[in-house]
Length: 129
Image (cartoon, rainbow, N blue to C red; front, side):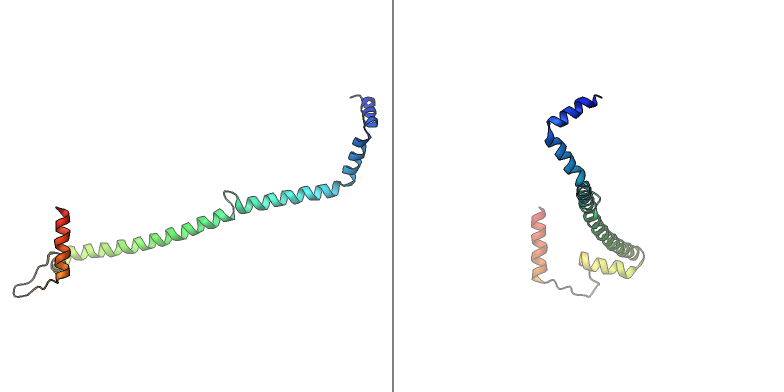
């Protein structure tokens, strides 16, 4: 590299020399500012990035909700399984189901059907046709 030409260029352009001196004198301030900007960018990334704290909290809330749904569905499944076992083996459960759904009655019993239930069943039947 031609050092003489560089020295001549700098001598002709004194503002470059003064700017270089100012930058050199304020190098600590510039380094501090650069590190501050870097720290702010890093903090923003930690909080708001795709896997940041905000996303983590959202995923954690979704996991809690799904866990509650799993527990609720397991309880419902257990209840339905128990009901199926009862209907397969317990004569009283079978009779109760037949009385409720099919409106069966024992000989000598009288079954009363309210007008509301009758109108609902006739409406449902009319809508099925």
